[in-house]
Structure formats: structure tokens, C-alpha cells
Image (cartoon, rainbow, N blue to C red; front, side):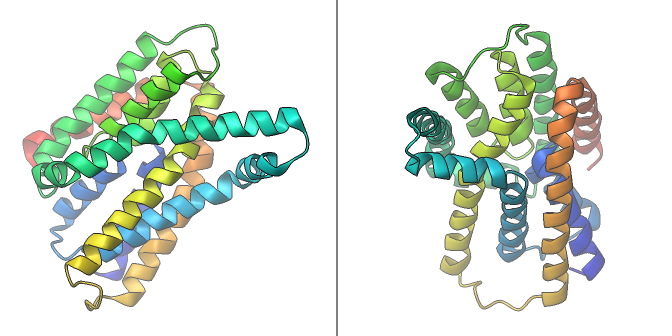
Length: 265
């Protein structure tokens, strides 16, 4: 993989991790279009870790407030922080269950099969469209049932081509959560999932004996930096975008790209 190919794939990863268009799906399509066969787990780990770090930077104040709230003497702040952290923990359970039972099957079924990823992007388009159609006009608060529903939407996104941010933001909006809170909760709940997925990839990397594999250090470093910068920008942009407009534009994009990938690649 050349320097410029790594940069392009890093940008694709960073942008599509937070835009509702599926980062895993776009990475597979990008590799197929470039004809790349040497993009190993090391690169995947680096770019996924970079996008997770960009989320930490964007939401550093929210995360600091939640952590401080756990230890504060202010009872209301402590209660609110405990509750929100509990909701975040609950939201990860469906994805953890799917990851440990179906991850290998889903990866073998979709990775290196861009046409299948294309159909998954079409499914993402349907999710985005339906979420806007059934969105509640009354803002509702997070609850056990709503958080679990958002968590199941995140679990669905383990399928390459199904957008994690699209599924979770769409589910939250459909369940009546305000658009601002839907984006915030979606990105914060992604952190344990992304870091967990990175840990699983690292485990696979060393078990496969690839930990000492040779690779283009400059290219991988450039791809990692590109993923961080583009992820940081996309995360901030998506937060503003969700509040101002609906998700139908992304639905159309996913449908067009999905059909093209399914038919042409």
C-alpha cells in the first residue's frame, strides 16, 4: 500500500466512522477500487484507534464532566453522571453479544465481497429513511427500553455496510430522543465499542503471527493521522448537521453507492 493510498483510506475511515454511511463498508469498497490485497489488521487497528481518539478530543468536556460527576459531592450531578454512564454501559451489551458470537461469521461473509457490502449500504439507506418517517415530534428522555433499542441498532451495524452512527442516531431519533442528544449519545456509546473492536483486532493480529510483519511505516503513520483529522472534523460536522437537517440526504447517498457497488464491483 502506497503513501497516498493509505492517506485516502485513512480519510475514508475517519469521515465515514461518524457520517451515517458505514466506515467498514467504505473501507472494503475503497480496497476493492484500489485493488489492494495487502491492507492487514495493523492498518485497521491504527485507523480505528485514531477515530476513537478523535471522539475523545471532541467530547473531552462531556467525558470529563461524567468522570468528575462520579466523585463529586453534588448529589444531583453524581446521580446524573451515574445514570448516564449506566445508559452507555447498557447500550454496549447487544453489540458485545453479537461481536463474540457472530463477528467471525459476518466478517467472512462480507469482507472481500464488495457486492454484499453494497446491499448492506442499501439497508442503511432504508434505516435512515424509515427513522425520519417515524421520528417522534415530542422529545423524550433516555430510558431502559430506548437505550436498549439504540444498543440493538448498534449491534446491527457490526455487519459491514450497515452504518453504526446512522443506525444509532436513526434509532434514537425514531424513538423520540432529541437530535442533539441522539448525536451525543451515539458518539459516546461508540467509544467502548470502537476500543473493544480494536482490542479484538489486536488479539487476532498477534494470534495470526502478524505482529512482526513488515509494512510501510510512513504510509501507515500517514493513514493514521489522516483518520484522526478527518474523524475529528466529521464528528463535529455531524453533530451540527443532525440538529439542522434530516438524514434523507445520506439515505440517498447510501442507496446510490450501494446499488453501484452491488452491481458494478
